Length: 277
Image 1 (cartoon, rainbow, N blue to C red):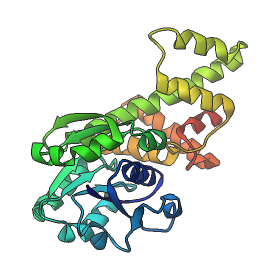
Image 2 (cartoon, rainbow, N blue to C red):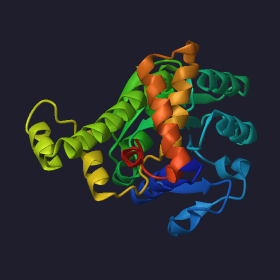
Image 3 (cartoon, rainbow, N blue to C red):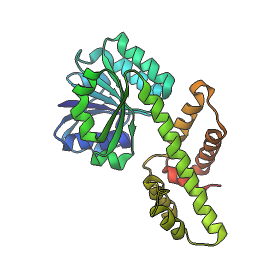
């Protein structure tokens, strides 16, 4: 299948490489030259969004935020084949998801609201989880692409429900990471090894694999970005903007992430919250 990836940052590049390895014919476009060199010879690089999507059956957008997606979509939708499917995989929040759906309908094109849960490692290995909302026919047409990238495709609605659910998922993930950072700090201050906590959690129902993975990164001081702090902060702010939803925990998460950004960890992995109080 001919697939176009619009956005070749960490996630977009990993997804494009996985698709090419899975036998799809892949074209990418990126706003800058970053990451393009590592895509391999099987991936074609386009000079603009319109030419990138000209003969694609499925187009995936994976850029930073809603404003960026909207800008790219305005340039690519007029060139998109009438029967192509646009898989909008960026995390953009509720308001932007609604605006993007309207934009697609204005151009009479099919859009799937389909943010992914997972980072660069799962993307490279085809282990992402898709949260998908949209018309059934569009989902089935895009299914070979979704299956190549993900081990789960969860259909959660027919409109923009997936973008809303993704914000909740990322809030839970961020909260678990910050909680792990503080639990490890408590181990240090109370004078017993972190390994004792990990042993207790890992052997019972409290063991969350994601949080345990972050615990290892925190202990090793390895903050190589899988999910950068700056993107987590963006998502938490999108949650706060949704109907002015600002419970105390979400507000505390925003403050903690902002401190990590201020300390120079914006592009480090979310585990870097352990490096700031």
